[in-house]
Amino acid sequence: MPTTHPESGQKPSRISAVMRPVNSVVERFIPSALVFAVVLSLVVAILALVLTDAGPVDVLVGWGDGLAGLLAFMTQMALILLLGHALANTGPVRRLLTAMAGLPKSPGQAYVFVFLAAAVASLITWGLGLVVGGLLAKEVAAQGREKGLQLHFPMLVAAGFSGFVVWHMGYSGSGPLAAATEGSFIAEQLGRTIPITDTTFTWWNITAVVATIVLVAVALALVAPKAGDKIVELQVDARSSDDVAIDDEVVTPADRVDASRILTTLVGLALVAYLITHYVQGGTATLDIVNWTFLALIFLLVRNPFELIGLIKNAASNVGEILLQFPLYAGIMGIMTTTGLIAVFSDFLVNIATPGTFGVLALLSAGIVNFFVPSGGGQFAVQAPIMLDAANRLGVDPAVAIMAVSYGDQWTNMIQPFWALPLLAIAGLKMRDILGYTMVTLIASGIVFVGILLIVGAG
Image (cartoon, rainbow, N blue to C red; front, side):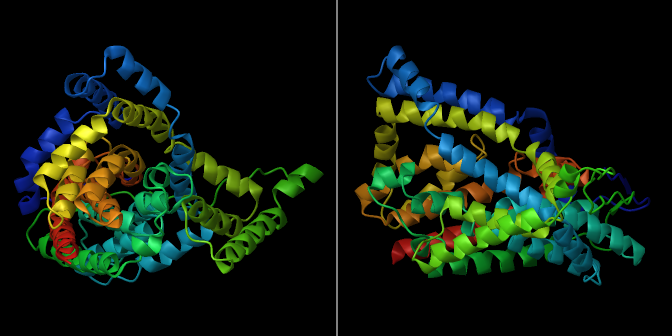
């Protein structure tokens, strides 16, 4: 891991000074995401007992029966992260990142460039965006030091993580994809699927993507360290090698097969052929199709099965916590569904919202819930049924409810430490090192999200 050091004789960053109290709260009082999931389960169980006619046995049975309710969705979410991480670490992608890292010629360009690259990668797949943000921040910092640029490494990492603020608006957005997938819990509730042309590829979501990227880029450029501010540079060039270790001994026929590119290429080409056929025949993007797209790229980019196995082993360590949490989220869904708690929450929202304000209220509630259910897929599973029911009763397009929840999830990710952890591990930093800058991203993106939902609500 890289280490950092402050340059002497310079005053503290203004952003760091302002955010110091928030940093302290985050570091001292925010527990792990797993603890949040357990606590939320208890809170929902208590609310069901207090606000509905359900008894303790009803709540327990609803929770237990619901634990297995998201197994397919859980696997799809885990695959997105696993494959995104593996794709980012394939040799060609790593070499592309190395080449791109030499493009910035000034500190300001470096910060904005890392953000833009991470944002584009996040729109492709959120797993890729997280990893690209960390890897590119390190590479830009290392090459910038070689060119004599004084780059504030925490700012580079914050810029990389800020790209994650648009992930749910892109190709791997779990909410829109779940709504577009036959047999999903959303399709079952609505009695139909909602194609991504009604969510991800609407004019207003695309407008919001562009506006968010532009406004956040400007905001980050404005708050970047100025002359005289404390600069924390990358001290040690700990860039990982592009190569995945391959067994030295290739002597048996089996070894030669494992070291050959033929089989991985054949599988990759077969997947590409299937995807082309799927779209030609009128198919649309679903969670599975998105995953097979990234799997095809990985099979085509790796050198052989040895490398693929190594990439998957490296990526698997990031998936375990998701697999552990999703049954708990499913249990929460089971409680809310069987006890009628969904209707209680929906009634409350309907009573305070209008068709014009529904999207903004859904955004704000999703932003709050994200602190307790940091997984975008898990949060969508818990919250979307409530919002869709309320939207139906208010006469609001369900696509607005889906995207409002999606916006709220990605919005407060900027100050929720859960998804920052993989990137921070790559960079060797802590949440407090970047929180001041990601708070700026929260404010800038929030302006866009609220604005676009008010426009859509007024229409």
